[in-house]
Image (cartoon, rainbow, N blue to C red; front, side):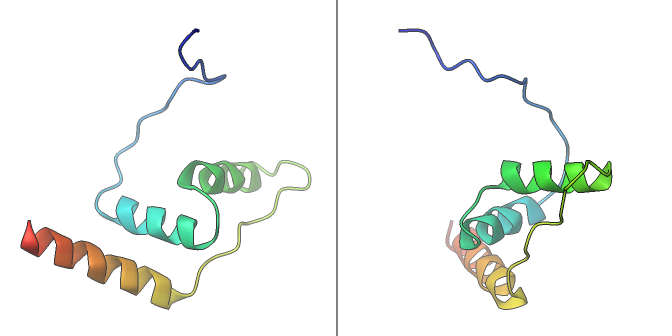
Length: 75
């Protein structure tokens, strides 16, 4: 059996700790970061039919950030 061969190579960008909040927000919306980023890129470059992804409530982000900070303190 061959290893996983994605269709596109990974791209690397620097974001910071908000990356983890973004992950929690995407999961809360039933998706993943990569899917949200692809939607944003399509919208930004004005692909026909592209729409902005739905955003979670701010409370979801604050809860994720609080949980992450609590974990960092105990580690």
